[in-house]
Amino acid sequence: MTSMSSDPVLADRLASLLPTDVDYCSIRSMSERYEQIMVRNGVVEPVHSVDDSGVMVTVWSNGGSGYAATAGSSDAAILAAVTEAGRWAAISVGRFAGGAPVSTGSRGSYRTTVDRPWNTSSLAERIDQVKIATEQLRTDDRIVDAQTAITDRTINTVFVDTAGARIEQTQTQLMPDMRVIAHDAGQTQSRSLGGFSQMGQGGSEVLDRFGFGPAPQRLAEEALELLDAPNCPTDVRDIVLAPDQMVLQIHESIGHPLELDRILGDERNFAGTSFVTLDMFGSFRYGSDLLNVTFDPTVGGEMASYDFDDDGTPAERTHLIREGILERPLGGGSSQQRAGLDGVANSRSSSWNRPAIDRMANLNLEPGDSSFDELIGGIEKGIYLETNTSWSIDDSRNKFQFSCERGTLIEDGELTTTVRNPSYRGISSTFWRNLSGVGDESTFEVMGVANCGKGEPSQVIWVGHASPPCRFSDVEVFGAES
Image (cartoon, rainbow, N blue to C red; front, side, top):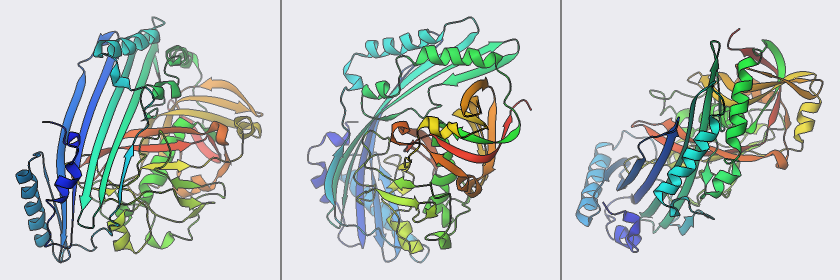
């Protein structure tokens, strides 16, 4: 089917189909073009391509809410979805606590800045680039598995509503992945390019941003080094988390607990609840004075940058946690009305056939004033941890246990011995209150996550995270072989 975003008058056409006999209605068209090229051990995997589009209609009427989606692009198909959404709105009257999003009737557009489009080269050339990177990983007979992938995605969205909103947005994302597995004498170790965190909006310049070119040699060398490295000690130590591990720490122990629909109980059956309660906002000490976390869809090149969320709410940089004190939840317009709290513009959908719900977007830990040398300089006995490899956290996002690909001991303020199988555990608020150092602007890295799952029916969406390395005091660390 032809991408709906190719229609130059699509917004006006959709607006002409809005009903006039309801309290509120929005129509959102969304098209996605997706390509993944993967090479594993010299073999080119089948190229995974997606070209998908459709329309979501949401209706609020007499206190009820309903939605319906269609893959059809004709006026008749969209009007049928309007009728179906209205039918469900009538059924839900009296069964839904909340109200329609408060639309500002916003008009505007957003488009990712792309310096060097990835897909302007031929498919053969794109495959060759991935093949060459994979071959560069295979430096030793002990390398038993090597793979590289590059995923390119463009999402076009057009949104209109009965309040007069007209919004068009285009996000272009590039997601490189590279990983290598080494094995010898019964020991297996792996290294990857950030553990699925190295990604952003843009074109081929994203590869340069994450050092894709020189990465194969480094990853292969580090995987081989880990084969002979000692196991991570079991102890209570100061730790410093690299930015690619901070991505996971922020995502799981700040992002998900602050999603307002989760706090209100909407996610209880599928993804769990939150240790955060409504009365904590404005007073709860989430972390030390060094903890400053922002919702910021305005960062150029970050995965979830946009000007409007999928309910048409203008997006702006907002503090969620300031100097350790919890200020705002990650809640879109509908959840804000239900909770009676101010939130942010984070009502987002993963596809045309999914409703917009409260999601993380760009969730960033703001830089502090310490250089990397200063972060480790005051540590007598600690460990530097890089790149998440596994995670476990309870359904209220409180107690957690995370493992990393690589650790380096810190002794008397210096990085010393590489250790394998490092893990650490903690309780979210206690852990963040032990934040004792935050890297400065020179250490700040912009990354993301492309596989955040939530919702019923399930939605997998892309999220941005940015952070410097951070130091935490008195953390329980241990090795997987302990």
